[in-house]
Image (cartoon, rainbow, N blue to C red):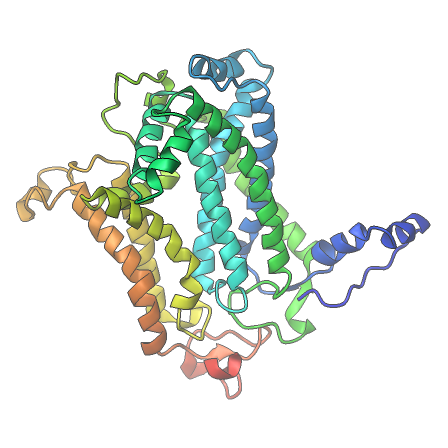
Length: 439
């Protein structure tokens, strides 16, 4: 927690402002002197990366909106005009398009870090839920942004996804008709998607502000998962973590710049560089790479409604995770059994991403080796998707609750400042405490 304010105005203007609008005090208490656990590693820098990427997406998006034409007859041409005729339009468009991928890359690393170190557990449940809301808003915003270039994949992707919403009972058809603005994906649909795509990043920024506010109430989690016990466990955020985060952000920006300047179209689909044609459907419709795991879950079951329920359920599961995990130990540093299942979970997510990028009837194990020991039907992408989806839900709803009741964790340090030992047998008396004592 931030504790009592230590800000002291140094000039007459600062004292005058502090009594009327204490914005400098707020900045000092939340950025400069905020007590932060002294053992945070580089996995904690992705919060700063995400804030930067959100700012880049908003700024570049506003500039692109000045030149984009949300009309089915002109949208595709307007994107090409931005690239070719607008001053530095190619740079702004490449930054925005690749920025979406970098945004999701950072958020996935951020999520998996939280899962590993148990940052979703009490007293940080609201912080986690706000993060899940941000993630859901990012998915909606990214999908609508993917439709705006009005290429082949944009148009037919919109047709597929909006029709899936229509499978929902009672409200599905009404929502689909509202999104379409009629009875098919057409000009009103593009206008709606453009308006919502422009609006939602500002909504995300508002939820991010709440997210940061919720973070400053209990304070940061840390790699040990042990609560801060005294000032000896913390250091001021500045300069220790501003410098560390600054270095990590610079490295991340180098990766981002490599895509923007050297391979700006590497993460896109070549089919989307053909103008939308409702009469010509692409052979294989796929979303952007960061939505492929959910697309694989959608196709894993033959029933359309069940596929939609599972796809949305995969995201909804994250919201209730703090109550599914029954372990009293936060960090998987001290949960070797849970760590094993966690790494299998990462593999399952990667497998789902692989499956989402391929057609359902493609062989899961390509080449002649697969059918030698598997029936050709069992050696399909759809079956591999089912295995991955089964483990995804089993990890959260079965494995995570049971592990907390059955596993025996390693001893946990009394405090952040205590030596973190890798083996319980070498721990001196008093160096570790049971989960119940740790709190």
